[in-house]
Length: 385
Image 1 (cartoon, rainbow, N blue to C red):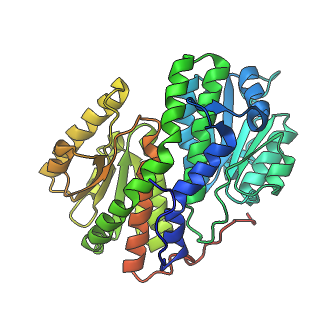
Image 2: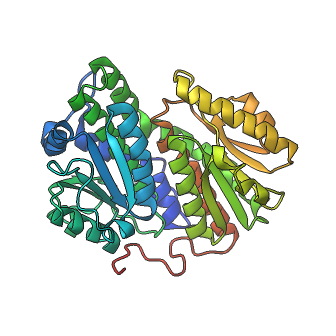
């Protein structure tokens, strides 16, 4: 399956950049992995410095804002579950305002990883500088080589998404997720947290993500273009996910807010009945991430709990738009509408899941007459606090 689809015109840059994601992810992978052999291998040169930090430190602090923070939330789960690191995720805007000088290891300060599309985000740059002032080694993940953060950090890691013209982050976000998965597997190797063959299997699966997304994109676009008008009466939506999928629920909700001016919130699915359920009605639909890795016991447990929740939501006559594994008749019978995602391992599902949520935000915005490339009150890089 070619990563570049047949030439077509796009009504908006956001839609073009959604379609550019397979190629962008492939660039990220090719920069950090040697894909020429039968088994993908880490490239030493771009990863040597961060690998050393993973060997030296048992923990990590992540500071970011907006979509980048959601990539950080996903990274927290990946790094903890796959590599055994202890990870804290901070709002960049809060990190620099705290008086704490070190975390857990005053004689060996935790590395601080900052994520920023532009590498110039004011809050995140302030967090990076404060971390450096406190003596923490720093890692900057940006989409702009030579940006201020890249220059000032101890370690620079580029996502190589390419220029992103639309204000809503799409390919810059999925390349961040991709790089976070590479780092989680690298940390697992450096810390001896996973067997060599398990890491190789997951790297091979990661290498297949660009083609998988390219193959699914046209069907997602057709499905969502047809579905979006059915939700045009909603002014509030709740996005639900468990585990690593909670980060994607947060990102999906943010994408809808900034693109279409509709109110949306992302919640852990298990928290719905602890207050937010009071909002659920025919006018407040649920967007539920209900995919599953059938080979992962913890993923199966989360899935079973999500199925149970959906049974209850059906009794409440809630409107539910679900993302589910292709062919999952259980979810299809409980949801009002279903978007199909090809099965993948738990750690890789988020990269695919976010793409239809981007398309949903895009279609809702277009249907509401919003200039989706340039939403009001927003800029591509927030360079003032």
